[in-house]
Amino acid sequence: MITTLYLSNDTSARAAGADRLAHAWEREPDLQLIRTSSRGAFFLEPLVECDGPAGRLLWPRATPGDLPRIRAGIGGVQLSDVPFLAQQQRFVFSRFGQAEPLSLTQYRADGGWQAADRAAGWSPETIIQEMKASGLRGRGGAAFPVWNKWDIARRTASDQKYVVANADEGDAGTYCDRMIMEGEPFRLIEGMLICAKAIGADCGYIYCRWEYPAAAGAMRAAISEAERAGALAVEGRPFRLEVFRGAGSYVCGEETALLSSLEGGRGMVKVRPPYPAVAGLYGKPTVVSNVLTFATVTEIVSRGAAWHAALGTERSKGTVALQLGGRIRQPGLIEIPFGSTLREVLERFGGGMADGGRFKAVQVGGPLGSLFPESQLDIHLCFDAFNDAGAVLGHGGIVVFDDQTDMVELARHYMTFTAEESCGTCSPCRIGSVRSRELLERIERGQGTPADLELLADLGETMKATSLCAHGARGPYPVLTAIEHFGREFRNRLDQADA
Image 1: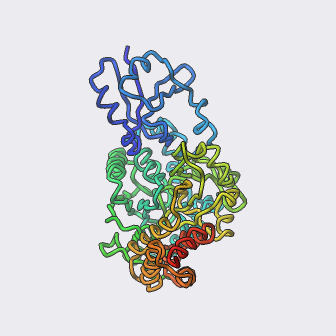
Image 2: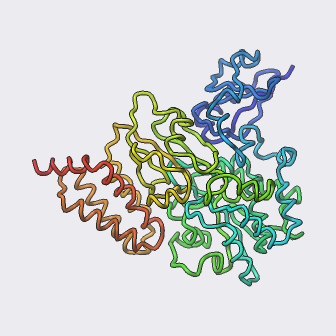
Image 3: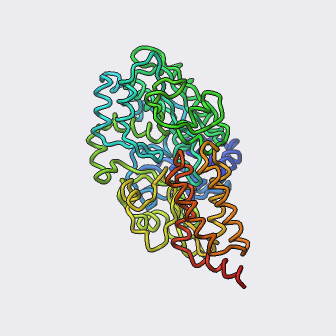
């Protein structure tokens, strides 16, 4: 009797040992091993699954020697017995852990491609109205209403229009776009086809981060499969879709810099307006959205706008994909409706601090995100609560730091990142980030003065107010919030200079 086991082929799962298991078991008789997408519970990887009478049984952190007991069904746990997974409300990631990434046949059998088929029978105006009714806002950080961007591109007359998926997922601690591309690439293609129908485009690009070779390979394979199946078409005409590998610049996550790179130039931010929806790639109307946004579009068209609008908060509709990392027990991806507090997420899903660690701070929104102390953990995870707090939810990255973290060193680290990744277009970012880094280096060496802290604050406010894009405008936030909440550590370094 053949035993069928399921094992993730996601990059993080392979890094945790999934390939080691696959290699060890590849010659085992009567064993079929199916590589799948990942459930995102990376603290359980390598995670082996097997069909049971009441659904999948899971064997977390499996080793090659576990095969006999897995075959015998000994020690497996039900999915419902894993709180990290059972307490989520997954929609975009509902099939992750089960899907075979490159099987269009299975994707269709599981309900995939329904959205593309449905949108094919709608007018562009109906599609955009559906996006408007859903309340969908972009998931890449700016949270711009999706329908508005699409409507501008639709109404702009042009002989050529483009759809571009921003897969340059550069925020430290984020990986949901990579998971989608590796785990369910047809979901992204569906969302891009729906957008193409809405704005009248017949060409698209997936701008994939250089550090994501497996994701780029999966997308290329999925595009080829969709072409073979005759599914890559809009209004009966072929839709040309290509994968473009970025060159490793963080600032290419900004849409105008991304388009400059896609055109073959250096990734430099441009002055707006005009916005890409009016004059984007090669000067033509272009919709640029990140991978998670297009993947959510697919779910909205499939389930209906009312479903999406019923989830979340008043102005942050739907679900949010949060990626938990740092010094917590249970790092991984969760999908829940907008509105939970940061404290609830860390305790309920993060499982609290890792062994030996005591909480000190958490950063939300990537390397340009604000730092929150324990007293601010009751903030609600939605666009507007973060905006009111002068913070950004960004791409949903959450990184926890313990009490051994040196906040002066951390602030210097983030400003160094901002300086090194600045594209150099505007002087507030190009010069302000370098001068700020130099001040922090002096403070870190114990050679700073109180005037240096005042100058840091002044430079930070100037960068926030006058930088051309979010890279320079957000760059000071980690430093300023570190000084605001952990000022004693900075003053102690100044005291060392006085001694």
